[in-house]
Length: 184
Image 1 (cartoon, one colour):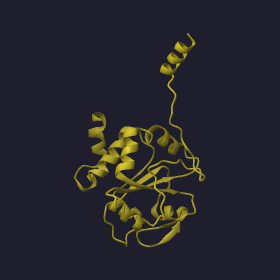
Image 2 (cartoon, rainbow, N blue to C red):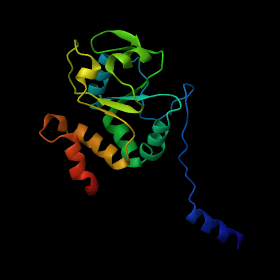
Image 3 (tube, rainbow, N blue to C red):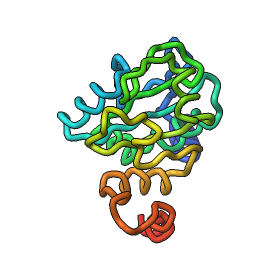
Image 4 (cartoon, rainbow, N blue to C red):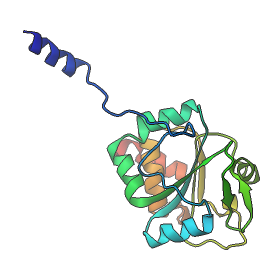
């Protein structure tokens, strides 16, 4: 009888086996976030060698929207596997001190380089083309920069649009999302 009650409880209230893991820096750890020396020129080259799209994820310690994305969106197997398989993701802490070298060669601490790029909100994601002029800064080279926390459908379609190189076509990202949101 006791076992039947436990089974019924597990069916009614399933246990969430996904647990967020905070790193020493207070940011959420994910297997698809790659630790690099944060030289964007080298990171782009490595992404291209792995035939992945280069993406920067901007976060900060204690960010409730970042937690929501890791809990509710990045944990979805389809999105996690897309990030793992198709994107070369590095993370920048908008209040961090780790040095980052921009495509133009300038090296600044994370908290200074985000000012240079105008990133003021977390989470923000920035995606890049395969080739970038080394005189260009990241915020100018980005094919799409998306601040905010979004539901799984919008996030999935954003990733798909980048992989399809939708930014080279005529259809705006917002129209692509609106057209496809109820189809997936």
